[in-house]
Every structure is written in structure tokens, then in C-alpha cells.
Image (cartoon, rainbow, N blue to C red; front, top):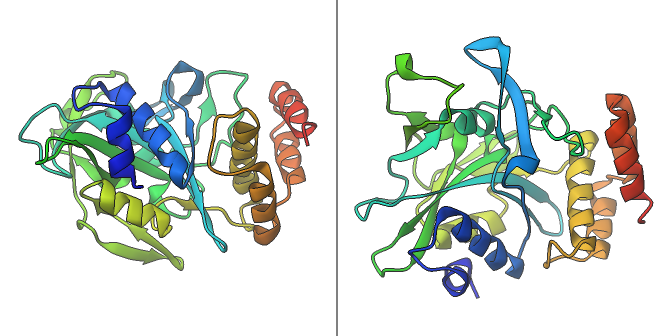
Length: 284
């Protein structure tokens, strides 16, 4: 089975944006662990780039996708949009709220708006690869079926005048992919594809670990945070692909222990979240 085949079972071309990314999440269970991070619970705060005295906020993404093989693991935050025009071409012009684009495409230092949510403030700013922030646009293809293109959010550039930019507003602006379609580049030894025109190429690329931020022992703070999220999501039956044992084996191979998660939270001096994290770790 493939993502392209699976998603047809869970949604229709007439489905709205939310139903489509939920259908995509269900389809991923054939080869990846995916968490729904959509909505107000996962709102992040960061400085307005045009006025650093002002904080703005938006949801972190729609889906957090985690994939791995025997030697490497990656994760990406995917923001989805739906192209409503019948003339839309893959990686074409699409409307995105500025603040959403800035969060996943410009990598600010962040903090969770919801005090019950812990997230490392440098998860984006300390990245190795830009594909930690991703965009997927759902469209109806020439067969009349649901499809989705993919691009690194950082490579989506606005087609509107910069004088019209207002990060305080949630009004969408038009963006267009400004990279090389299907181009695979190499950054710090890691392969990264810039865009994919459809779900077939997207699936091939994410399985080949050409999309997402690497989980590495040199960044234990971020890596342990993501692995802990996946472990807890598996325990809560929110992910259906991996088992907790799979993640523990992966931790051993990558040399990333769970205890580093606690050390990171202690270092952050975020006591309310530290209490929550201790409760999670005791589940082991």
C-alpha cells in the first residue's frame, strides 16, 4: 500500500483541509509515526520580526512526522493547505498566513503558549536542516483523486509587496515555491529534497530520509525531546506504526537516553513542565 492509495480511503476531494490532513495522518501508519499537533493546544509564541517588542502566536503545524531506518531518524513539522482552484499545478501559488510561514520557514526562538506543553525553545533556530519545517498542499489531480505536493517551507517566497506584510494579522498572503523541483541537496552530510510534486515522490523521499531534521546524539536536548514525544504518543495509542521497544532500540543505536530529557527540562528551569515530564518518564 502507498500514501496515495491509502488517503483515498479516508477522505474525498471535497473534504476540507482539516479532514484531509487527518486522513493523511491515518495513511501514514503504514510506515511512520505521526502526531496531530493542530490547534490552540499547540500554539507557539515568538517575536514579531517587524516589532520585537510584540509577541505573536500561531499553531506549530498540523502534523509532526517521525520516520527512521536502521541507521538514521528524522522528524518534520508539516503544515497543510488545500488548493481550491481546479487549475492549481503542483508546487504552485498558495495562500499562507505570514506568521505560519515565518514560524516554519524563518525558524525563530519559540515558547509554548499553553503552559502544560513543553517544547525546547531552540527546536527551530538550532536546526541542521531547513526541512524541519514543511508545507504540503492538497489538490485534486488529473485522475480526480486526492494528491499532495511538498516543499520546504523556507523555500516558499511571498509574491506580494513587502510593504503589505503584517505579521500581526492572520490574513493569508500568496506564496510560491522558489527552489529547484525534485532537487536533492546535501547539507552537513545529510540529503534533503527541496520539493515533491505529488504523494508518490513525497513517500519515496520521506522513506529515503530526505525530509526532516536528523535525530542526532550531538543535539541530545532536541533529539531526546522528539523521541520522548513519540514514545508517549505510542503509549497513548496516538501512533500505530512503531512500538515503544522499537524506539528504545533506536535510542540505543543513536546513543540518546531518556534521562537527558529530564536534564534538559531542569536546565530550562520550567518547573510546571518539569513536573509533567517526571510523570511521563515514570511510565517507563
